[in-house]
Amino acid sequence: MNEVKLMKGNEAMAEAAIRAGCDAYFGYPITPQSEVLEYLAREMPKHNRVVMQAESELASINMVYGAAGAGFRTMTSSSSPGISLMLEGISYMAGAEVPCLIVNVNRAGPGLGTIQPGQGDYFQATKGGGHGDYRLIVLAPNSVQEMADFVYLGFDLAEKYRNPVMILSDGAIGQMMEKVQFPDYTIPLADKSWATTGKPTSRKRNYITSLHIQPEKMEEHNHHLEEKFNRMRNEEVRYEEVNTEDADYLLVSYGLTARICQKAMDLAREKGMKVGLFRPITLFPFPYQRLKELAGNMKMMMSVELNSGQMVEDVRLATEGKVPVTFYGRMGGMIPTPEEIVQQLENRIYVTTNNN
Amino acid sequence: MSLLTTTDHLIAEESTVACPERAFELVYQRPQTLVDTNMHYCPGCAHSLMHKLIMEVVDELGIQETTVGVAPVGCSVFAYDYMDIDMQQAPHGRACAVATGIKRLMPDHYVFTYQGDGDLAAIGIAETLHAINRGENILIVFMNNAVYGMTSGQMAPTTLMGMKTTTSPGGRTVSYHGSPIKMAELIAPLDGAVYVTRQSVYNANAVRKTKKALLNAFKFQQQHQGTSFIEIIGNCPSNWRMTPLEANKFIEEEMLKTYPLGDIKTPGALSVK
Image 1 (cartoon, rainbow over the protein chains, first blue to last red):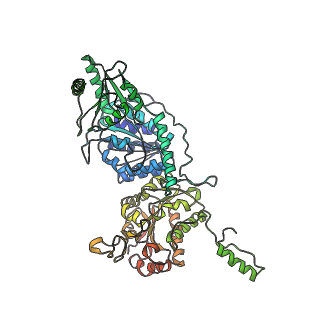
Image 2: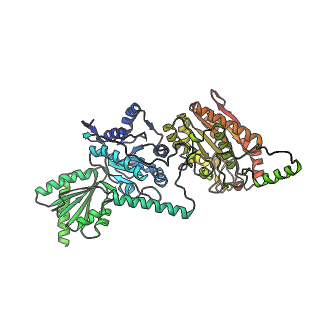
Image 3: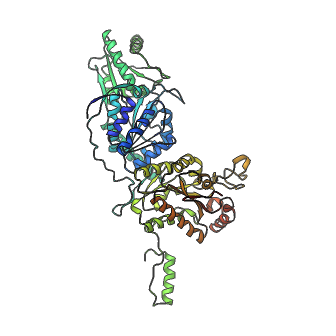
């Protein structure tokens, strides 16, 4: 059961979905994540589960809405342009409190962009993305192992909060091969009394809707959702920190770039620079509190991302001006080397030191 | 009976006075699965009648426990307020995709969508065609009243030639807007469509035929035959700027010229007109 396997990130995620009791997967091909649909099209029927190639991402997410609304463990996956198409459905599901798992294997954009990895969907994933006030729990894996682990966690959190959960990965993590182990797992009991399974005489009818036409009712519902998002903020923050005890400089990074930063940190330490690494695992809820605590001990923080500077805004919000927060990013599917990150860190140390 | 309306009660009382020996006999009542509440629909609107007919069929087949409906965006978005069954409200146009998700996970349940012309024939035509092409074993009830009702009278893909709407103030023209889309004829050739019919509810006879069509569709679904598609030529007295009677007359005299009634496809027999 717990043997070590060598798998692609996308395939590990798909295999984890089967082991996590995913009842149905609906998807549409898009690079760099088509392996998920291909893997599940081959494997799901062996377990009598539903897998379908929809006519579009619009259809995929709405098939998810239907199946998840009927109380089944349901997921979809896509990459950036496809996720944009799904935002309507995601907003409806958040509004109607329908749990599901959505995976975004982020590629570089905007527009059709390129099929190479990117982190340009950070804002879209963490600030709502679609219309209206809502949030998703966003999990950011940095390895093939976490691609698998977060599928189980994602389903559990989705059902716990009756809210969609997103795994925000990228083209590199999705495509790379690494060793992975699938844990023993039992589906936690979740209340599904709200699901549209057909109305017996013993209960009132269930209906799933995000419509509250009376402003008073709508605001009441908004408050209810916000209370839930606050509960996530209080209970679901996850992060990893390395060498923060003695660090003067902190690299803040998630997913693929966090791995590169780990190597950069080691190189910098060899050079005698006291560098630590902070890796948010939940991008929503973002670990504001822990970063705020760390701010007092640092001389500078540098957020490293595959975009033009998105998470860095949350790092600045967290640290409340207590420490200089700088940014280094690559875009267009380009990936920084560890040496490049050390060089950029040294440049910023020089600038901030001389400015002070 | 508390189910009688106020007027029924008065009439019943009169007859009681005239014939004191006659006991009341219940010959007609609200379907059990139609929620006893005021509807938000305008007077004379076909939606309320269609809701009642669907619920009558659910009652007669005894399938309340195994039926799930999907409501669209549009006037009938509140269908779940009136139908005492489990329901999901779908994003605009996506009802057939939502229904696919429900049905694929619960293949022995009865699943139907209830969609207007903007929802089904404009924004949702891709989801509609593909669900039918896959032969999803669902019923699609397509309410065609040639106009966007809830947003107050804009042009629909099904708006008749020359018809004036708030967004075709000079009347619909072929050269500028194209011709009305005939959904039933469009989808009938798809292999997944098992039963395609166009009906209406503008008079008692049409209502009877529509109910028969609904019974057929649920029967085909029970037999896992494929997609049933019932197009209903409805009305919109408010946005047509007509009285309910004028609106029903307009259906008979104008709408049916473009949208003739009858079966277009029955199991094993395709007859596209």
